Length: 590
Image (tube, rainbow, N blue to C red):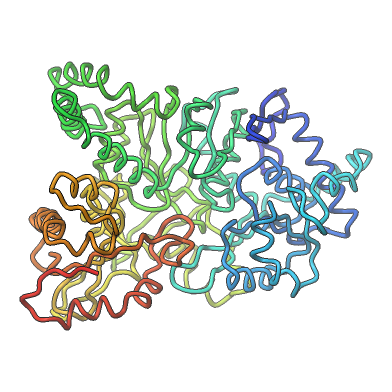
């Protein structure tokens, strides 16, 4: 039985283990080339003085050099320490110092120039994947190694235990400085042992990778792909995902909710410009899909017959847009609106949602792909077989199992605050549905009380608000206030199409949201949301914002989670105005 991650590379030959676009053409490497270069990487690291336990940094978009660096480092017991490619200068200063890495592999000139000043403060070696003047390039570096070292490396591998440290992954830091999560071979392998039978991927299937490999979700799914003998295709960029999917025709990909929400909003936008019979067919098909039961227990014969027609006229085109062969999309990292799962699954693009954390390698629970009775809408599925979950008295989710981290790097107090008697205190609040399905209701630290003493779960309310096609992003506020409000970033492409129909000619976003007709559209949407909420949860005021939030501008993490503290700081005046303006001014624009 495989015990260490680097043992996952299969012995059968693969002509196209990894593929990526180079100068406009797909360039592939075989499993034999991958293994050869991994050995050369291990040997080169030995040549520059690295040994077991030393840290190897990776700062790059997804590409096969990333995985060669990872697997080569592992084979001599080095600890790979990857970072987000869009890391900020301040965060780079911190993690470069904190990680104590000996070598940093950086992708390209653009990334290097952003962190160059941070690099100069430290003495580690920097190697570039692309050619950068003044730096040693990847191909040059691995030529330091020698295949004749293969026996030496094999001997080193024998002394590497499943309990040895494999990687340190820095959390994205929604509330403060990132923490280095220490994960062993056993941690990740315990997840892969379960994942092997969870998805319908076979030898030679094409899979698509674009979520950052330094994120534990994509990292361990990549290990799963390698174990299954899949052919991995790396996205060129986030902007070219659509074009790449049509070219690659993958069977599987991973995604985070924000991306799936954006795809869904684009579909609605395209539907909104249809006219006549095409518009009616689109709306009819969407309404049918929204009735679909993902467990296939309540789908009547009549619904199934209608869905066949809708599939031929509408949904077959959706499948072609993702390559035509997509078996499933695995979603994680944050809650996804149940409606989106329902509609895409009905359209023949199953979305399987799960739950996990960096600290749990990551999977804790998943809705099943194969067993429909192990799916439950609005939940993150059944707890996987080698993990235990219990709900604390205050609703916090506690996790125990071989996937749980060994601790936070150089932070014993933080480790002790979350690891107690073998149980990881996740900080997430949830409940068990029908004693089987785990449901996440919010982050414990994000819950707040109104001045009336009512607890508010902001993520739940934000998900409800984002169900509107008018809304791109939102954050709920109201701690210690007497009512709940929201900051809203509109879905401007959709809003502009509605504005044209209303003969509103404003082109600038800041002016568009000042228009009373546009404001009334949002008022009606919020009223729809409020109709399904308890009185104390209802959104009494909201403020429209003209600038989209992003990780680059500081409001979001690289996986599109809200950085609430940063948003509070940035929009403190706007938030204050929601509570200090006259009571009769129910809704605000900015």
